[in-house]
Length: 154
Image (cartoon, rainbow, N blue to C red; front, side, top):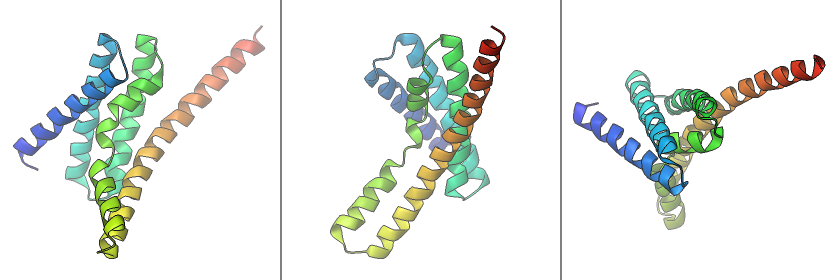
């Protein structure tokens, strides 16, 4: 990947993240937090693209990192995790793949292209979902054991 393409991805990822966090009506500190998360996610995504061609892994690791980041920042900022995560990860959403999948399906001209785009889109979506789920399950288990210990000590 060329430096111009990397900078374009980073800038557009951060701008998209900021726009989405404004749409979520986030306060100024959360907008900055989400922008940093978007920058981190796109940076990890760019690294993954340079390392592997596997669509699942290219989206799994950035979503894993985004979820860890969102969980940490939610504790630091004393706010919910979901808005931070949703805004930080928005740059990974496969909009172009979804568009072309729908286009090939609706036009019915090239069903092989439809199947290829659908498979690619599902790999991207699975990578994002599995990355978020892995960290969310771990955090949920940690919190469950904390609360269990608190109530047992009373």
